[in-house]
Image 1 (cartoon, rainbow, N blue to C red):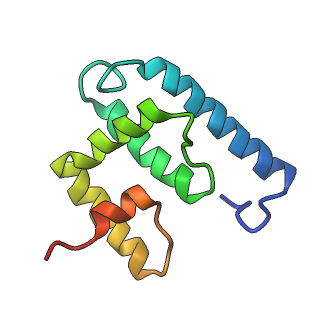
Image 2: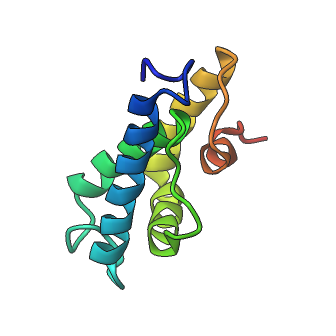
Image 3: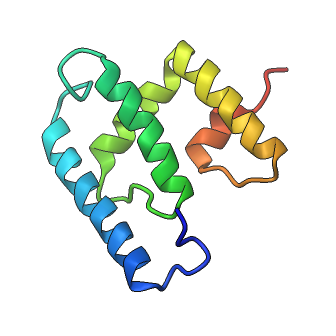
Length: 111
């Protein structure tokens, strides 16, 4: 988090590489499952919030993670997730912060 201003710092490069390696492992682990640990659980909620933070800090999932991205889409479609993560996104926008595209999509106020 403290390395945002110095993205080329070796520690920042290493942190992004570690995040990508973690996503690679999660991509393999999720396989064809709909949720991370069998049924929808706290694991899904915790990882959803963690990957939002990772994306915002410069360590997003990539095209190498299509299953995780599909999982994230399922998570984002859940009404409770849309409500909570959307409110968080709106707050971040009100503070002039940039949002990952998937979070911006659920953070737009309903007409």
